[in-house]
Length: 350
Ligand SMILES: NC(=O)c1ccc[n+]([C@@H]2O[C@H](COP(=O)([O-])OP(=O)(O)OC[C@H]3O[C@@H](n4cnc5c(N)ncnc54)[C@H](O)[C@@H]3O)[C@@H](O)[C@H]2O)c1
Image (tube, rainbow, N blue to C red):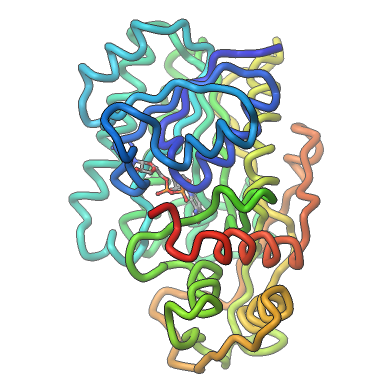
């Protein structure tokens, strides 16, 4: 059944891919985004380029409002215009390193923005929410693979991760206080890849924070080599191992979360990991990308980064059991799709 879905941060990387899947599933989509980390419309009140391309991919239309979640009145105005069934809340600042340098900006944007959204939703009686959380809430994992019962908020090493943990806590408390709330907390592992069309993808501002966009910019010649932070971890090749998930699989996770939230017996706030459960090392990723783009990716081994851990992988058994969701796209497809996007859009959306 088609729902009216309001997507905060829908012009961003995960958001644009999620909106594609929502439109394909016949939902009506309203995006709000202030474009702090997304290319803006080239003219007046048009759509940001990522959303123009979403319409091109799907042959369907969506509605866009450029606004910040920090502007409470603007949010009230949007909610008064539509009969929203469910909100997918992706809007956040997400650069871990920057969050260490600018903690106040991160706490203000991610926590105040979320509080405004929850307050306005409460006022207008929209109490169904899907939240973009992160594996960072597990801190330094105490066991692997990390399942949803793993302690959260212990050893979270940066303000960005803290904002995800605090937002989860706020939502859990809200769902305890008011039984009408239905909340799904999606804990993403490491989203990579792009839509197979090559029309949308990750378009980082400045130096990419994440491995795959960095490798991709080396492959296209925008950067000389990849820095590999440490090759003396207790992993098979000594480099860090992470659980990478194709962004289209992740996007489909939101679609099944909507179905879950509207099941009559669903209550409270419930967390699900979205990953693959498979660990991929930095060197394995570099090798797979070299294969996908047909050239050797140069890299240099440098010292470990503070706060990095050897291995983080998800247990995704709960999402498989309760959401009937499983990632199906493998490493080669992650690299091929990223490369297609990068090759066709060497300078991203600009
Ligand atoms: N990409 C990842 O590696 C990853 C991993 C785990 C969790 N997440 C979470 O998933 C969500 C989406 O991530 P992404 O990779 O698509 O990031 P992104 O930066 O591409 O998208 C976030 C969007 O939110 C918008 N935004 C930020 N603050 C806003 C505000 N105050 N008001 C309105 N819009 C605002 C930005 O302009 C951007 O378009 C974020 O919440 C992020 O923390 C991402």
